[in-house]
Length: 194
Image (cartoon, rainbow, N blue to C red; front, side):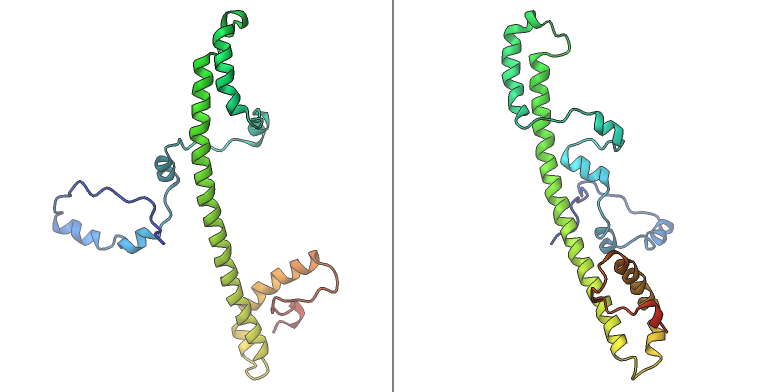
């Protein structure tokens, strides 16, 4: 799986740097470290060919007219009919050209939105799987610490940080769940913490 979605252009060669600059360069991050960095939003927007804008406020989104299903197909039909009835309707801001331009822009953005949504969903689900794997390992450690607590009385004290962390979430989850639901986290209850 390739992580770096944006590859820098290698067409321009840089001249050799003086010796003082070479020393500073060694402190720069390695190539492997830069490949693990997430692409900047500006880079992704540029790659998709869209403008990166500020997020709209909730009230601004609520005031927008929502597109009805199939309205994009109506834009070209309306443009053809408007061409015939332009004099009768007398609309200055709405022309056949603006209707067709809006249709093209909507199709352009919709295609990129679908692509970005597929990428987002893949990243989101991969992150959920990593979270599941990581939490599974922490819970496995906590269960093992609990199982070996009698053999090594100092073991729970050494793992107190993990037991407290998991116990805090267990306590909040227990308050939301039904009474009598068994605990499957493997974390100690706050009252049994050493």
